[in-house]
Amino acid sequence: MRRQIAAMAALLALIPGMAMAAPGSHLRAEDNRIAAITYRLATAGAGLCDERHPLTGLLFHHLAEYEVRDRPQLISTYGLDRGPGILTVLDDSPAAEAGLAAGDVLLTVNGRRFPPPLAVSAGRKEWRQALDAVEALLEEQLKLGPVRLMVLRDRAPIELTLGSVPGCPARVRLARSGQVNAFANGRYVVMTTGLLGFIQDEDELAIVIAHELAHNVLRHRDRLEAQNVPRGLLRGIGKNASRVRATEEEADRLGIRLAWAAGYDVSAAIPFWRRFYARYDTVPQLFRTHPGLRAREKLISETIAELGAASAQRR
Image 1 (cartoon, helix red, strand yellow):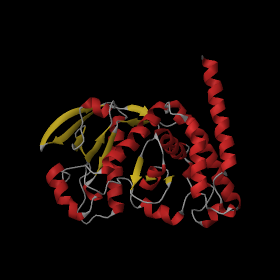
Image 2: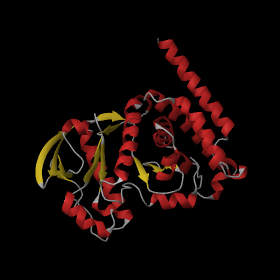
Image 3: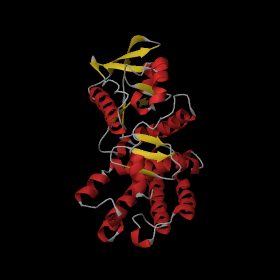
Image 4: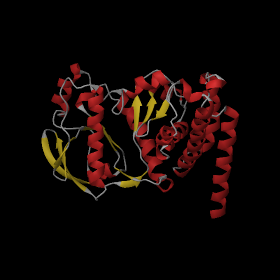
């Protein structure tokens, strides 16, 4: 999606948790929707990714994500002062098979304690780092095989065994913002609630998420940094623009392939982009870093045709 540099900086301050409202709010359902599609894309498309991660179907939240005034209730109700909490568990996932449930609090993995909740005064940078540490520790242990989890449920500790399935890197967060945007930062994909409201169905949502996932899978941020492509206005000028545009084309191709592998209707891509460009494509040609609509339609049509031909040959 088109990147608005100042807006992106503001949104990046929100990741990775994005909850910022008490569990049980409408954001939990929206988070679950995003997580479910991402999990499907990442597992079905595992063969398209050269780096595979252990996926569990868990979505975490952390005490420090929430407003100070809400934390006493979260401590009282969920025990989030004891460790990271589980915001949602996807159906038919390793987490569901393990018996984990929304509201559980993680205490230890293979006997190693998860990073503790932060002080009430902790800022966003600190709780982003805390959630990163939680995910890193769990992934590190899962790469060795199924793990033993000590979990707090209804104020009582229980032990469960959690496995995983291999998949593409799949960290996607929902930002509560009226901006209509989505972007990848190398580690996470961030989508705004504004864009979620613009999207019409699950196929369109999968196509947008898959495009942004593709940026992270292909390590586009690292490549652009190695090419010294800046993140400001100069990003859209000369060779910088062509380099960014090349990554967008690659992400379109891989994104369509990921969505196809997951069984989504990729023919929804062109109608979506037509609606999006008609309403939101306001970037002057001089600063354009994304393909124009016609170029995008051509690339997507060619990719779908290639996938269709390859599928027909296998029958």
